[in-house]
Picture 1 (cartoon, rainbow, N blue to C red):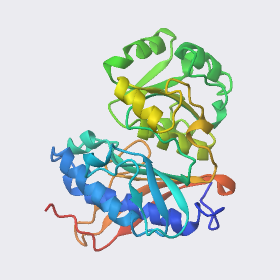
Picture 2 (cartoon, rainbow, N blue to C red; picture 1 turned 90 degrees about the vertical axis):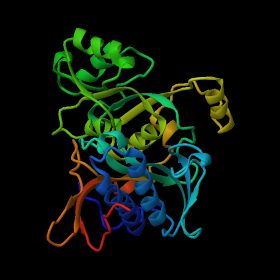
Picture 3 (cartoon, one colour; picture 1 turned 60 degrees about the vertical axis):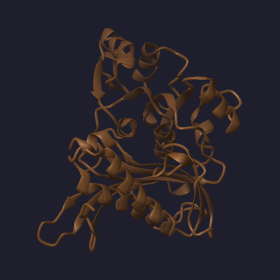
Picture 4 (tube, rainbow, N blue to C red; picture 1 turned 180 degrees about the horizontal axis):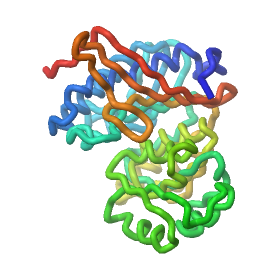
Amino acid sequence: MLLKNKLDRTVCTQSMVMDFLTAAQQAAVAAYPWIGRGNKHEADGAGTSAMRTQMNKIEMSGVIVIGEGEMDEAPMLYINEKLGTGNGPEVDIAVDPIEGTSLMAKGQDNSLAVIGIAEKGCLLHAPDMYMQKIAVGPRAKGCIDINLSLTENMIAIAKPLGKNVEDLTVMIQDRPRHDELINEVITAGARVKLFSDVDITGAIATAFDEIDVDLLVGTGGAPEGVITALALKCLGGDFQAKLIPQDENEYNRCIKMGIAHPEKALMMDDIVKTDNCFFVATGITDGMLLKGVQQNKETGAMLTHSLVIVGGASKGYQFVDQTLYKQSVAIA
């Protein structure tokens, strides 16, 4: 389904979607010179600066409700940072200017720039911390339960997907903390698909029938979890999560940010409380969903590949190929 020209309500206007798409594109292009150069901090700084500059041009009153840390962790786009001109709609922003910085620094696949946007007060406001996640596409919506075992969830989603458990593919980040989950998939006779970083891509892939991913599970970053929930809500999928405070300080930060019961399971509507939202992502390096930034050697123009997903009455998605001219890609 293609993105409609006329989008619903104030947040999902055509101009705002395109403005945020430009912000993701600019971040990806700014990061491009750092691919494979082993310096993820410089890459993150370049992408963050470009995204911040572009978002501050948007006619909105935006606030980052979940991002890459607090104000003293600059140059990251920090939690509670205000963005935009101060005019226009009030919006919540969940952001990761460069998702997969380590991958990009090593010249590996699956790094991208991502942003999730919703009307004010509708995205989970939480610290940058660990989050347990489970995600499926539209055909398995309503069949997952994060409080049940992985095996029980595989059994529950197999029937609506028209598969046997043995035919399922479960995507899990390749980390020691996930060894039990990996073994559980193998014991059940299903296939496991491991990845090193960037769970956003794998979770969204569950909503695309042409990609062989049925379920994503595991523990990763909360900002990525909120962005993923938003994208899957727009696509008609399902997502559940639990925040995992590592210590008393993180637990108390959750309380301070309005999460009365940090240990409680979070349903899709707890994380994203509206359909008036949208998601944009631009590939930095090639990945499962998106191609990376490419530069025309003759003209210097940058070719970007992006994904826009919109919720509400205009629910749909569109892949966007766009050539950007007059872009400075030299490393300072």
